[in-house]
Amino acid sequence: MDEQPRLMHSHTGVGMAGHPGLPQHMQEGTGGTDGDGRKQDIGDILQQIMTITDQSLDEAQARKHALNCHRMKPALFNVLCEIKEKTVLSIRGAQEEEPPDPQLMRLDNMLLAEGVSGPEKGGGSAAAAAAAAASGGVGADNSAEHSDYRAKLSQIRQIYHTELEKYEQACNEFTTHVMNLLREQSRTRPISPKEIERMVNIIHRKFSSIQMQLKQSTCEAVMILRSRFLDARRKRRNFNKQATEILNEYFYSHLSNPYPSEEAKEELAKKCAITVAQVSNWFGNKRIRYKKNIGKFQEEANMYAARTAVNAANASSHGSQANSPSTPNSLHPVTTVCYTTMKTEILGCFCKLSPYFGGV
DNA sequence: ATCAATGATTCCTA
DNA sequence: TAGGAATCATTGAT
Image 1 (cartoon, rainbow, N blue to C red):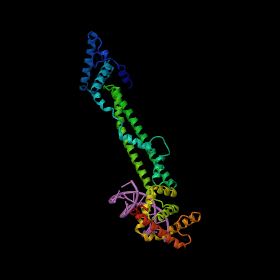
Image 2 (cartoon, rainbow, N blue to C red):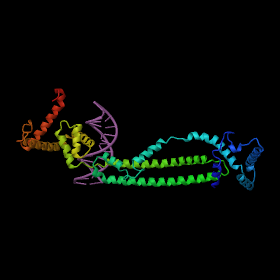
Image 3 (cartoon, rainbow, N blue to C red):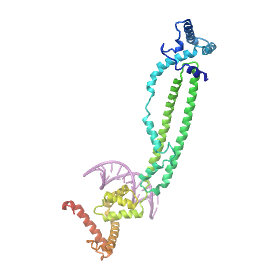
Image 4 (cartoon, rainbow, N blue to C red):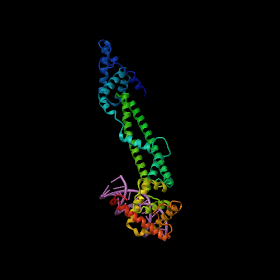
């Protein structure tokens, strides 16, 4: 079994200076009687090879054995390998150095980024954290979903690695099998180690496409998991009472112009422990819903106006009496509410009209 | 089970 | 690109 490679290797590196395609030892002394004898030998062998298929199975078997034992066999074998190498294989050679598949690289990168391939790092906690941040930033509320995400990702990771192991095992088994087969074949056919190596590469490429499918489906599974996790945004939580109050307070105290600036939004977001986007959503919803049904919100408006008035009164009684024209603090609370609401509305009118007055 | 409230999303416009 | 409008999807009270 291992005899053949040794036979073939025993002649590698033999000079080709004389006759292209013939190893040096077959070209030495071609002018002498010894050379003629070798030529005769080669002719005999070739003749025997050419006619081997015309013979019965037993005869052919015997002839093959005889040929294998022939003293010129290794040299002839080398020549055939070299010729084959020069013709068929050199044509294929050009196509072999393929650049790494960009699609495969993308898949690899993604699997690495999601924590599926590569070292275990808490089941892609970075991706989960990013998704959690995108889903509203209320970290504690998401911990259950977070761990669920991690558990599912770890499941995917496990399946991926199991499949990958199976794939590698199958690839190795098949490669070994083919290599053995080719080595066996190389006793009777001109198959060089280079060609075996090439065949191994072809097998690896074929298996690599299977591997790519595995990676593809793993990526899809991760994407689905991720999108489901991100869709948890839809499973909204109502803002807590305090946050709603802060937002309402701002809204009703700026009723004339309920459009917080970017800084104000950031401030509100910080106070309410929500994101700026959520603040924007809230104001968007509030404005449109208030506008659609002012009557319904009147009570709420009054309540917050009263609260603002009380706050203002408290503030002014604490030393800033000069802040005129604040709400007169001697008025009855109900009157105060009306006063504050009116003031807000009037100021709102001024704000709307301000472009016509050159800014008020 | 039903329904109003409400946060999020999508599409459109200025 | 921010905001308006319509709509979706979920929550929570009944």
